[in-house]
Image (cartoon, rainbow, N blue to C red; front, top):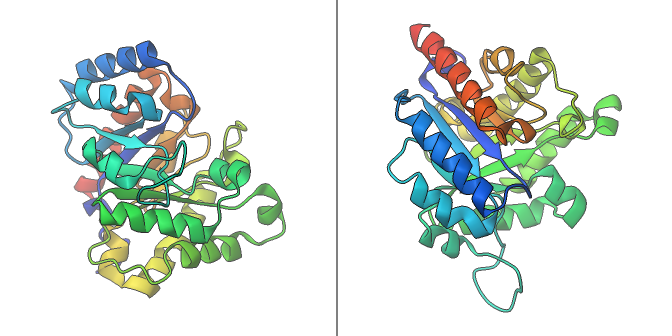
Length: 270
């Protein structure tokens, strides 16, 4: 059995990265409406995830307690504790009961100078607290136009996962986010997304073996929205999305979950 034959065994993850948006009232309102929607959402093969800002994580957790949804942090410190003003540790996130955390987002790389070595340290801190990292990788427009997409993706994988053991593939989620498609309105075509994510899957297969590569979720991030999510997640190596702007409206977010439910059923039917 190869990695494509078991694609229908992986569920889909629809993750909303809110970035620096939504105050406390807006966060509460979104979560209440999401909780109401989820009362009729019982598709176990689709996991919605939302990533509010740090101050409102606990409130989101409280409102969505017991619902089929996960709350994630947008980042984590590479340090365990100490004199690091403004930082939030993996242990602190764990104390909230969080199960997911985004790391390596292109905006962190671009605006805060994060490199693969630092991101790897964050991944290790999350592993130490049994929190699943959503590891972001992807190339810039300049790198794509220079034909360096494969080189960049492999380099980031090797840097962030250097000497990192995986036993099942469920310990980490990878999000392929072409930087040129984030917040620009440009979206990779379904074929471009599949090509890049098949490359990632192939690298995982060579590094960790077929079973782990087949089990690991690879999301697409980059201007995914209700209008294009269907064709993107129909690709065999696209296991959902890490969604920015389109995840901020509850109606759009729920529409994307609905599309994912339909796709999950198609995968199961083979």
